[in-house]
Image (cartoon, rainbow, N blue to C red; front, side):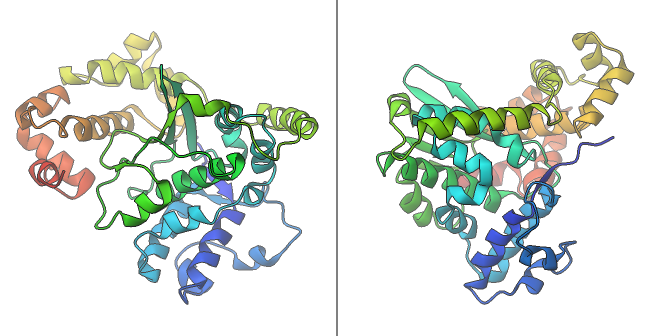
Length: 340
């Protein structure tokens, strides 16, 4: 059974409220989507129990950007985001003792709000990488929702530290937009596009910044309660991560397959299929995701010829790579590289 990725219905309210400022009404925004607008007006509806597909939320962000004519729509929604909008998840973060603890809890408790994407935190010697990774890849274009999330994270970090915080750099997987003035204004840091990951690069020394209005006693209670709730959620298996590692390490051979992946993982083909299906993916989907991610990385290096990129990704030739890349991005590898 495919994994169901959802988000609280309340998330749609943020889009609707922002779009209404441009004269876009709710019915116009949600036309063609299975959204029960009457539920949004009920104050007794639980934001945890009343949920919508995560992919639908992503598509609504893109539709709102088109209808409003605001190419930075997601950024502007993120800029106005407050911790109260995230219920228990938000209140836990605002009562953490330090920024570092808050980012750690964001990673740990993200599934309490939505399982459509995850936060990852990797520690370097002087920098930390706060990564936003999609589990639900059903929507091919995710720019607006992604920019909303990193902008909201940035604004919440500033709110928690009384404006004493800025990221060092900001990375996005999507292509360079026509105008990045709003990106630079909101993030107050260099912003890069067509990167392998969506992330905020953070100075490690800022992790010790205290949360200005944190209540230690309340944090203890909320942290305990949030931990209990998350422990009851379906676990997100590390099996997919292991499968991705195996596929990535063998993809240049051009012979990566269900059988070869299962053999390297030490499981049967049937078991591999079943476990990946439980996480809403498959070997073929993982191969395409990894090829796309690596292609964007390799093409940023002008010294790597297209023939070498095709080889590294396991394609039979440049033509096959050319066709696949155009399907992923709508551009040829040459066009993409020229626009960098």
